[in-house]
Image (cartoon, rainbow, N blue to C red):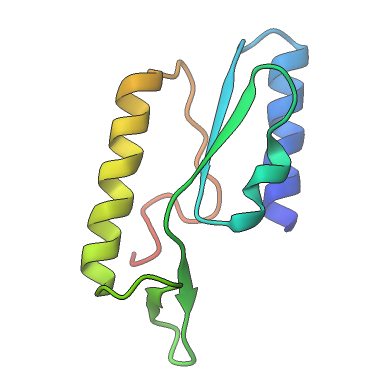
Length: 100
């Protein structure tokens, strides 16, 4: 939850300082919903991944392969960015994706 709290603090400062008017959080974390609720802030939860004992990743819940899941996640994110058209994009944790 630390990275979610850090992201929420950054978002609040960006809103308060007038850098942005709206924020859309995109996360595979089910807890990301705690970040929305304030005017101008919403979230999109994408299908999640889980780290396995050998440090590889697998879908958290869906019965598909990891490559299929990554395609679903990336296409969902691309569509959201296309429609939301943000002026600023902040990527927290794994900027190149969980498989890199």
